[in-house]
Length: 165
Image 1 (cartoon, rainbow, N blue to C red):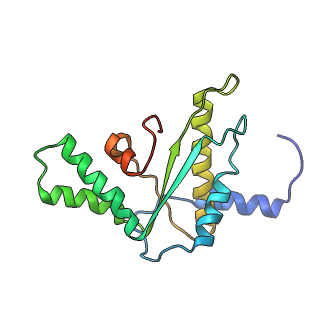
Image 2 (cartoon, rainbow, N blue to C red):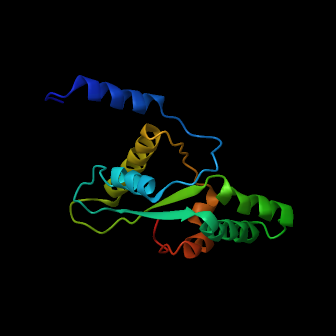
């Protein structure tokens, strides 16, 4: 890499990156619309070979998290038909561990010069940008996937396409 940059800015970006870690427990304070928009603005500035924008962000906050919680509970029941009410409730409650959920999905497109794997990497870079922006704003973030992320029930509940990842 060549070129010059402002050392102060470089140092502060470096500090934000190396001090970032996943949050285990979140505050109950909801985010403002401007904060969410700032996070998404940072996310979509990720490197994106071909400018395909192979990502989609679904924001769940307030009662809309129940959509995901109910779908996760239903997905558990599909996998484990004997799951009791307590296990299903525990599964549904996972959607309420944070006041805002940003569900990131990948929509790789057929492209002659940009293979799907590069598009998936771009989505990962978008997530990293989102995390770094969150940390720089004093917000916590954590990557949570779980087996239900690939469930048709969950995908339908979130209005994701079947081939969306």
